[in-house]
Length: 300
Image (cartoon, rainbow, N blue to C red):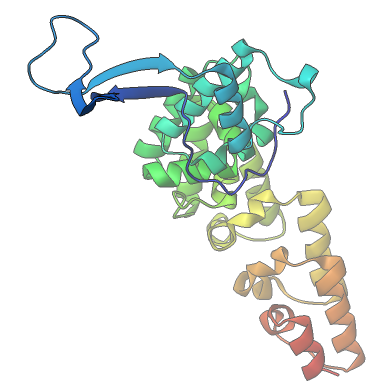
């Protein structure tokens, strides 16, 4: 079985895994008389009122295949020997039912399956994810729609333990002053699923360069993306370039912690060297916030 990342543009489907057939009347006609309509009764005695009768039946294997292909969960170009078995198709259908019952759109499912195929594997029990949905609703205060958005951005969060990972992380982020964690952004989804130990590493680094705990917390609250940066490959080289090459103070970093969010090789160093040649010194925000076009047009 192969999964696709992009779903087709279809948003409505005529076939569903379980269908209801409504038989209300049957028109009988003959060559010698006009049409006569009468209710079709499947069980006797026939009720006097003409209420519709519903028959529930399982969608066929081929219909399920078409449905999953339309969703983007099965490769429409798969060769005959690559087509999944009936059991595998039934499993996928049950997974689709689970996610759509939680409020996910059909277009979300290929991304979830691609990023976290374990959720669609036979050995995984989706009931184990209920605690995560409850955590997002009760602890994070995310609406059903926002919860779906967070999970779609980072579906691996469904595999995390609430007590040992998610709740301690949420508590620590809130202690630092990081807010609006219920917003369905990629950053928030990854932050919530980051171990506390990794978050503390970033705070420890900020304190090692001379910032107090309160100052470090303020920087983290203003730039929570900082938690996703490597200390040795990103934060430390940028700090050393700031104080050693640019001869800037720690106070400037406090005023503009967004400095850590810019590329050292592509923006910080080239602009610093350009301004040095012109014998110009600018505040960090003016040096880095402007687009290349505006910056180099101003400082030729």
